[in-house]
Length: 264
Image 1 (cartoon, rainbow, N blue to C red):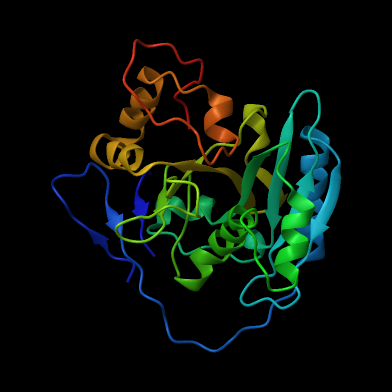
Image 2: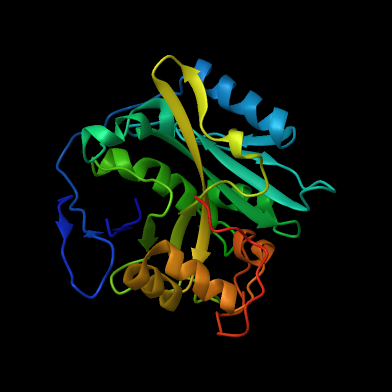
């Protein structure tokens, strides 16, 4: 199901690429005030607390359009020495899937892993005053991507990539990472995703993984398997890939040694 979403939802055929590229056009509509689905929030939060760890903080949206996106923060632990952030609200509404075969995949939430020295609370505090700092951008993207499929009447799923512009540019000053790749959640059992929250409603969870432009091109040309081989040959370890590092080394082809599986 890999594809690139460049946020019109018609796929663009390009013989150079192995996956379709979607370019989405903003639609004209009125602001649609949204509040969170408390039962949905409780089910997702309990699921994370059972399998990952206790939620230490929740950052609420004050005014929400289409869906009310909250960001929940699980502090670093000995087993997971990094912050785990996840959204609720994205799955309050079904996404617009491309065909009937994708109907079971209409609901999703996002996960983001940040290093233990990332000033998460300070990032939220500064952003709430309207003075976004250099640490808030990954969280801003979480909220933007959670709203994206509802804004553009499309969907997001494992294997999809979303670039920062066309052509893509670095997410923030000090990093050349410029594209999000959606992957299965990191460091959890296979049965973690999906979560059945109601009959006919399975919520899938996807890790937001920041990648470079050349890695995205590798994925577009050779598919997700090709990109994983590219990263494997470069010996990029899973922690370095899944836990955001604005200065993460670029892929360089070396002898194969990468302990990350190619599933998902």
